[in-house]
Length: 106
Image 1 (spheres, rainbow, N blue to C red):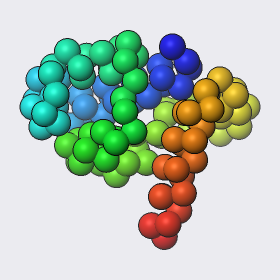
Image 2: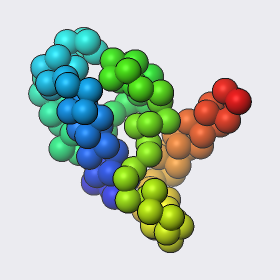
Image 3: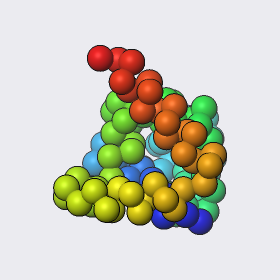
Image 4: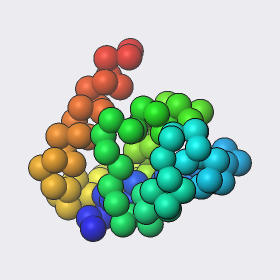
């Protein structure tokens, strides 16, 4: 499990609880098993890229909010670089696609 997966898992749980949804409720909205949401939030399984928009929609947040990790907001760019350096090529491509989609919304 990469640092990115841990950060994403924590962020997913943070947003889910802030939106007042249980794992069961989120799973029902997404059409997945409750265990799947638990695995995502504990970074046992990675979320597939095609599920990200559905997750954001179910949680009532824009997609980019799933990738705004709390400690990154502190302003220390070395944390961002460490996180990026810890990612696999697949994760980097995924993040690149998300960033491009966000920028296209402007």
